[in-house]
View 1 (cartoon, rainbow, N blue to C red):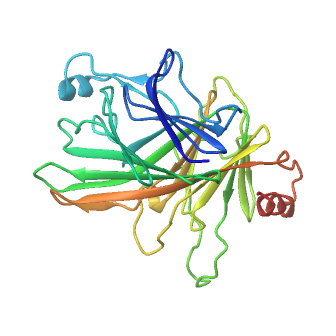
View 2 (cartoon, one colour; view 1 turned 60 degrees about the vertical axis):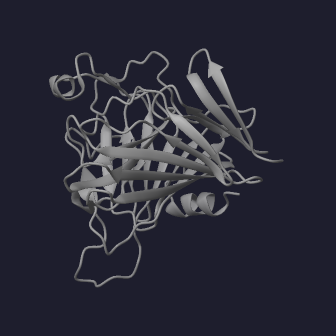
View 3 (cartoon, helix red, strand yellow; view 1 turned 30 degrees about the horizontal axis):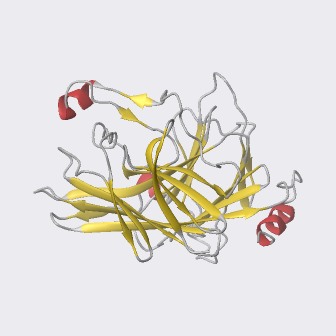
Length: 312
């Protein structure tokens, strides 16, 4: 089946582009964002979380000063591109304007207007395999300003609640006198959170709503370059390249997981770059969906290893 690309005006999601092969269906907003609002097997449920009530928003005095009265950032849901380290107002750019797109031989390029005041031109390019459940997402940013910019690209994928995050621990051979693993916790995160299981080979976060509790937010120097989310017989594996020879933000973390009440976020983070005027950088992620049996409840890490090995 050839890849199908159609533009439609969805009564809930707004104007969108639908991209589909024989196995996957993807929906990308072009009324705002862009956001990848939906990813799922054809005819099956979207694994992404979407904020249908637009309840997740940020409006601060710094935003109004930088972008004008009433400026507001909406998370919308799905998959988006941010810049790290997070700072106000640059990270929370109110990307609520229409997006242009270009159909290319290997995919679709989505380009929002340049970011006013920030001097950044971002884009998302999606490359869908014709006959496989694989989606490549190429995130790009160009410095249109007159001064050097220091940033990392920070793609965020918001997923429906109730699943389990699988995060590999580093197990490469290194100098025994040097640390090989970094575990970074954000303020308010509870290392004794009952949803969190720390193993020698895997970190698991079994999501459950915990009203009144602070979200669990942790990051690692994930040299394996992947993290996964298992939900109701579907597993999303998100892959990227970790370069051990380059510095990353957040105490050298190349990935982060956020577990709140309503959703889970899988996040990869690029190395930090000093971006001269006119320079551009990119960060590539690959998404693969699998059908699977339920993730084992066994505390034995060999059971988790077997589950990962048998994804197909």
